[in-house]
Structures are given as C-alpha cells and as structure tokens.
Length: 113
Length: 109
Image (cartoon, rainbow over all chains, first blue to last red; front, side, top):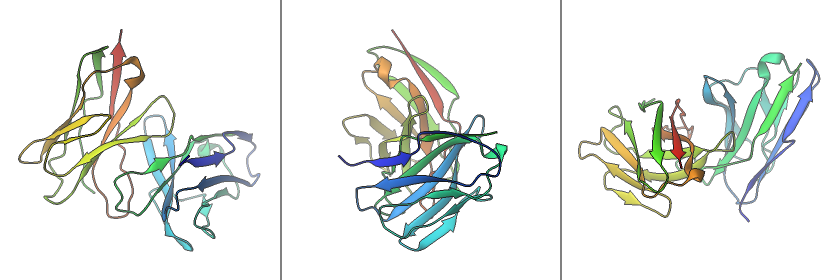
C-alpha cells in the first residue's frame, strides 16, 4: 500500500532534549516536505527536499533541521526543542515539486514542556 | 505567492450536493488550482485539481469560471464522512502547498 509513515505519532518531551521525528515513503517520490499545523495559523511549510541531498527552507525553518540521505526518508530534527515548537507535524511526499497530488503522513503531535 | 479566498464555514444536508466556492483572482493563466481536505487533524488529502476545463473524479467535481478567477468544488452527494476542512490551494514554484484557513464543511444528518 502506498503510504507515508511518521514516527512517533505522539511525543511529550522537555525543553532542550534533542528529538527526531522520522518520515518514510514507499512510493519512490523525489519531493518531500514537512509542515506544522497550529490553531489559527494553519499549515506552514518547515523544510522541503527536491531529491537526495537537496533540501531547502520553507516558511518556518527556525529551530529545525532535516536531512535527505536516502530517497525514502526525510527525518525532522529538533536539536533543542522549545515550548513554541509544540505543534502537529505532517510529512508529505510527491513525485516532484510540480506534482498535483501530495501524500501526507498521519501526523505527529509533539508537546514540549 | 498567489492567494485564494474561501468562506470560513458551510453546512450541508446529508445526501445533498455540497458546493464550496473559492476566489483565486490572482492565479495566472497557466496555473492550476488544487483542492485538498483535512478530516479532523488527519493528514490533508488531495481531492482534485484544474486549469481551465471542468474536472471530475471519483471524489468530486471542479467547476472553473471562464475567466479563471474562481472555482467551485462540488461533492455531489455529501455524507457525514465528508465533514472536514476544505482547502483551495494556489500554485507555488517550490511545491509548497499554501494552506489558508479553508472552509469548514459540516454535513448534517
């Protein structure tokens, strides 16, 4: 089944404790991205990647890192999480940046205390 | 980036057609408009896209005005499971999906 998976689905952590949210897709997609969703602010793009080893900042990249060493994986790294990074995070993938259909993961709900 | 405008909320009776409008007067002539929906904090789901002509797939129909300044997403027979936030999304050259506030569709029994 074609899908985007994220782990963990739920995470409660403390300020400053490094964490990684994994994202994996099984569709051989070149384009992957991360969004965060906050009440009243909607979904905003954090980072995106057009292919292996090619990443770029989205609208709200501060406090986040990403890597794209393999085509299928696009982890989101929070080196020193802060409470303002408490949010619902989504990973998405598509064949290319011009693809009309992007596939989203189920989301990761992160709480930083 | 181009912008879209949607009503914040709409109601629809179960079994009836839901017509969701979108204004996208800033989209240029060769740019698509995309529609996605998000069911209660799940990952957004692609519905349909269009350029000039009306489009239909198994989920919905998309009617685009001749001047391309607006479009209407039609769910022909809405069910309770269609209750969601519907987003009309303009194009971007980075692949970024620009989610506005969308239209919250409440399908009522």
